[in-house]
Amino acid sequence: MTTIRQINKLVAPLIAPPSALVQKAEALILCPVNHIINQLAIWRTSEARHFEVIWHCCPAFADSFTTWWHVTFLQAPSQLWFWSTPGIHEIFIARVNEDILPRMRAAQTIDGFLQHVSEPEFSARRLINHVDTDIRVDIARGDLDTARMKCRALHERCARDPESYWGRIWRRTTDRAGPLLEAGDKQALIALLHEWECDLISRLGLDAIYEPTPFPLELAAGA
Image (cartoon, rainbow, N blue to C red; front, side, top):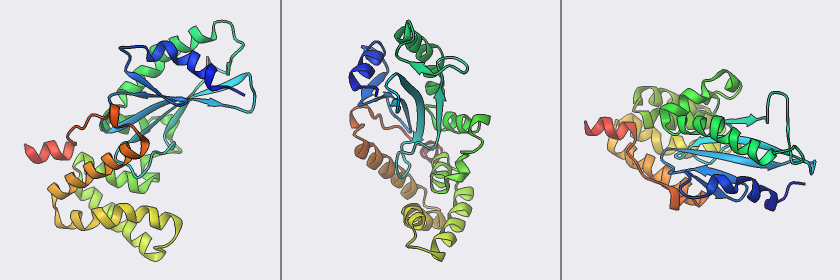
């Protein structure tokens, strides 16, 4: 099985200052973290000789960090990652710098994230399938009419079985955001977005690389 020592050696050139990547356990986080968390993970497999390279991205104001949106990168088309491959460390570094890191940077904003998850490879993992995060993104972007409509629909779903697993999760969004959306209280919604974001950042231990920035809703409200 892949060891943390192997992972540390593999990623060492990528985290040397002044790199924008920071290592956290078996993953590299792109920093600074604003509204989107980008994580490049080195995953162990059941085979000691084989590992996986997976990029996850998730809004920092979501209810939790989900691996819902991800891309698995191969060493090359139809080629898995094997520790025994000659020059594997150099191949990995080149792959990250030339392909993976630019894609992570492009998804560093909310609009970039939305464009990223609309790509064909994510056809089975559309944002709309993650309904509570979808509402939060609409609020963050300032599309309050759409967020209000979706929140009403999700509130109705929760009301049918409020103590179900998903009902309890979804209500953490609808119970807080619903009344504010109905009242059109932009300032309270902005404060809620920052609260959600700070909470997840704190739970993930990313405070040191987190850089608070205004949400699109906030910028529009201040215009």
